[in-house]
Length: 167
Image 1 (tube, helix red, strand yellow):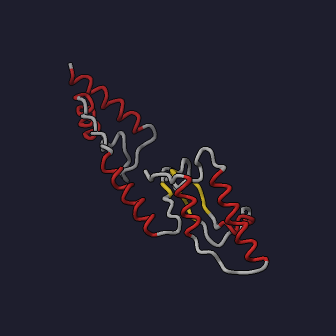
Image 2 (image 1 turned 180 degrees about the vertical axis):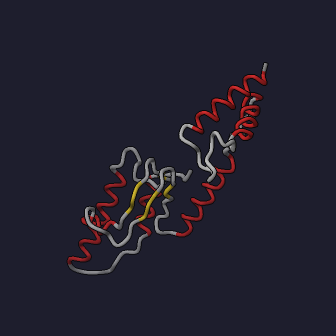
Image 3 (image 1 turned 90 degrees about the vertical axis):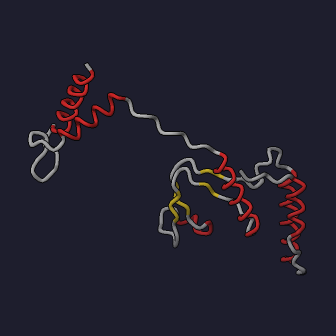
C-alpha cells in the first residue's frame, strides 16, 4: 500500500509548485490558493488528505468533474468502475505512479492465494453419476436443453446413486 505523506512532506511539495509571477487579481488568487492549501494541510488532524490507494466498495460510474451538473443528462465521458478496483493516486507525477505500481506489485507478491480445497469422495461420486445421467432423454430434450424439472430430477437421481455407492 502506498505510504501516506506527512504534513511536512505535503508542505514541501506545495512549496515546490512554481510560483506564477503575475500581478493584480490573478496573483492574489494564486497566493490565496497557496495559503488555503497550506491551511488545509495543517488543519487535517487525521491526515485524510494524504495520498493513499482507494479501493472502490461498490460499482460506480465516474464522469468528468466539470460536468457534474449533467448528472441527469449525458456527460461527454463515463467510466464504469467495478467494485474492488483500486484507484492509484499519482499526484500528476509519473514517478509517483510508478512507485505506487511497484508497491502494489510487491504487496500482491507477499499475499498468498488460498489453495483450493480437495473434493470429498462423495462429491467425486456425485459428479460421476450426474455426468453419466445428464444426457438421458428423460432429463433433456433432443436439442440439449433441460426438460421442465429435468435438472432437479437428475440431481436427485445422482445424489441417490452416489449415496448408494457409499454403502
